[in-house]
Image: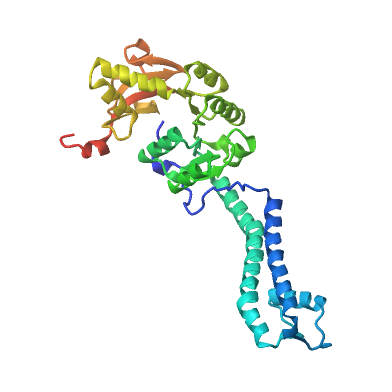
Length: 355
């Protein structure tokens, strides 16, 4: 059943559920940064040692290698006690032209390392926890390939707030695209329990699965169903033989794009307008839309032909079993019935001359 944007959870766009997977382990990144910093310090030590004649030690007047190391460290860290200082013009030029840029680079490395591994990670954990605490009644899209991206665009076009959509994918470029669309994103494996728990899969309104491969999609469906027994799951399956497996895994809806394309082609063979109308029904850009909703109180006892909203009733679902508009069960609606109807898309009609 579709919901109005006002009925959905509102999440601030400036807080995106974003986790970046590093190509290197943390320890390797830290070691690399520190190695570069100490290599630069080593260069400064070498420069100071070569030019040690231009330095003056106010303590004993002699510059040893230990003095050079000591002077380099207090110089790079901008401490500067003044007991050792450059006195020759060449030494001062070296400090200004060579040592100062290296000092700035070393400081940037240390500050950047502290930011990435302490401040930034702490901030991201706090930001992620804040969003997770508010996630409920959201739509989770597992896989942001062609089908997943199109589903998100269609949801947004139908009025879904992008901040109510969470996208999980392992590809960085897809994650960036989903984030640019305004969605909350999480870079990770959608078949991993911890990843799904992070987006509070059990509190989701629905889950859309499109992993690109049937085996991966079915595994994801199994994982989602294990963690969220009552959340509706829709999955894209490309091989007809795998549709039954997807349903057995726990999918409520199985969409086969190949079969749907075949339906459109077959419809076009029966008449030039049949395929056009089928595509019209499936897209928010059409003049009519399919909608699923529960029967309202004023409609109980009426026929499916007399719906309060003015839509054309096509089918009802009662206790999980479908009944067409021509069947006796559809002639008297009951509490709990789900109605599938065709409704006008007034916004689209307004853009069509004479609509």
